[in-house]
Structure formats: structure tokens, C-alpha cells
Image 1 (cartoon, rainbow, N blue to C red):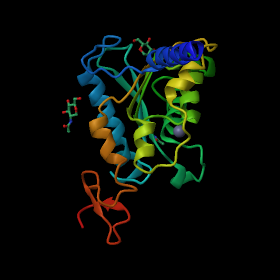
Image 2 (cartoon, rainbow, N blue to C red; image 1 turned 180 degrees about the horizontal axis):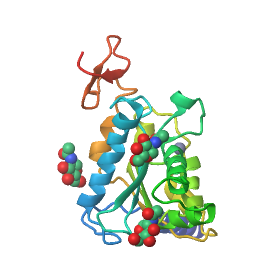
Image 3 (cartoon, rainbow, N blue to C red; image 1 turned 180 degrees about the vertical axis):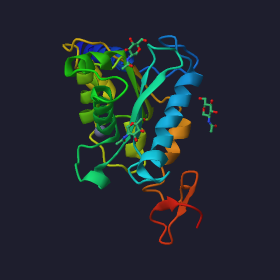
Amino acid sequence: MRLSHLFVASTAYLHGVLATTQLPLADETLMINGVTFETRARWMRLANQALGELSGSPCPFAAFGTVIVNHTASDEGELICMGVNENGKTGNPSSHGEIAAITNCTNILTDPNGKFRLTATEVAAAFTDLSLYTNAESCPMCASAIRWAGFREYIYGTSIARLIEKGWGQIRIPSVDIFEASFDLPYPSRLMANVLANETDPYFLWQYDPSYPCPLGCSRTKSGKSCKAGSS
Ligand SMILES: *[C@@H]1O[C@H](CO)[C@@H](O)[C@H](O)[C@H]1NC(C)=O
Ligand SMILES: *[C@@H]1O[C@H](CO)[C@@H](O)[C@H](O)[C@H]1NC(C)=O
Ligand SMILES: *[C@@H]1O[C@H](CO)[C@@H](O)[C@H](O)[C@H]1NC(C)=O
Ligand SMILES: [Zn+2]
């Protein structure tokens, strides 16, 4: 009896330790890598705005927006590119916002007539300077792509747990698990969670909840099933 108690206690202890080491960074009073929360909030807002700019609607159903920023150039950061979920546009089921942005940045950085004109080898190295902001936590496919790219920082808004809570079908592997399992890869990456989630959540909480208000600039369709740009 005593032994089994001990076992339970030590297992609980172990779980406690694991859970603690796996908690992603989510404290907005901190200045991580010299960047303030206000600056991060500005880029996260741009990830939201990318929806309107690239998809043509501030309230697309798949409201996943990403911006890729160079904070090593300056603490304020420089925009390299953005991307939004393009599944509906291209039919390619892997064109999530993060993948679309990584593809867009690769094209922009290697464009022979563009500002950067990098070679393939140079572009691979360039990602290790960059920060990826995405308005919702990446699925395991995108989180893996972020680790393969070697991004210096990865910052997300709404969590996968929150998406699931509000009706989204998701592959239930949090980014922090992908990061923890990728220790063989050459570049470390800093993960920041729930950044400005109070402003990213509204883009994701209406899709399966008819009582939830549409994002700013949108209103319910007559059937109430979806949101569209404009007033009703
Ligand atoms: C990011 O900024 C650093 C520091 O200024 C610079 O060396 C690097 O070329 C920049 N990367 C890109 C892709 O602009
Ligand atoms: C790529 O990013 C640029 C710069 O942010 C943006 O102007 C452009 O529309 C993006 N292209 C695509 C296909 O998302
Ligand atoms: C969301 O929260 C941040 C602090 O975490 C705050 O700066 C921002 O103003 C809030 N946004 C809204 C729309 O209330
Ligand atoms: Zn994804």
C-alpha cells in the first residue's frame, strides 16, 4: 500500500515537472529578445489584417493569417512577407497560412528582380534570423515546417485548445510538443503563446457558435451560419 502510494506520488511529481517545462512563454510584461509586447501586438494585429488584405474578406471561414518579420534588423522589426490560408483558393490542402507565408517569403527572398535576390542556400540561412507571427497556434504540420525552417521565434495568438473548445477539428498535438521533440535540429526557436489572444480569438470563435458576434467589419448571413463582409 505504501509502495503504491509512493508510485502515484512520484508519477504525479513527474507529470508536474513535465507539464511545467512544457509551458510555453505567455507573459506580456516580459521583453523577450529585446522586443516589447506592444511591438509584438502590432505584428500580431497585422497577421489578423492580412486576412482582409490577402483573402479579400476580414472574416474568411479559415481565418488563419501569418506575418514573417525580421527583428534582428531592428527591435521594431521589418516585414518580409505575409500569408493566409489558401486551401479554398488553390485547392491545396497543405496551403495553411504559415505554409503560404513561408512559400511567399521564399519567393520574395529569391526573386531575381526583387530586393533580396538570395540564393537557395542563402534563403535557408535567412530564416534563422526571422520571427513568424500567426494568429492561431500552428497545426503539427506547420509547427514542424517552422522547426525545419529554423525560425528564430514563433509567436501565436489563439491556442489549439481554444480552437477545439469552440468546435474546430484539429490534430491534437500542441506546438510545444513538436518543439520539444525537435531537439536534433540545428537551430533553437523561441515559442511565445497566446500573444494578443484577446484580439485573435474573435476571428475563430464565431464559425461554430451562431451566438458569437462576427469579426469587426462583418455580419451574419441570413441563415446565421456564417459571417460575411459588410453589415446585414
Ligand atoms: C535581417 O536583419 C539582419 C540584421 O540587420 C540582416 O543581416 C539580414 O540580412 C536580414 N534578413 C533579411 C531576410 O532581410
Ligand atoms: C506576399 O507578401 C507580400 C508582402 O507582405 C504581400 O504583399 C503579398 O500579397 C503576399 N503574397 C501572397 C501570395 O500572399
Ligand atoms: C488585448 O489585450 C492587450 C493586453 O494583453 C491590450 O494591450 C489590448 O488593448 C487588448 N485589446 C483589446 C481590443 O481590448
Ligand atoms: Zn497548419
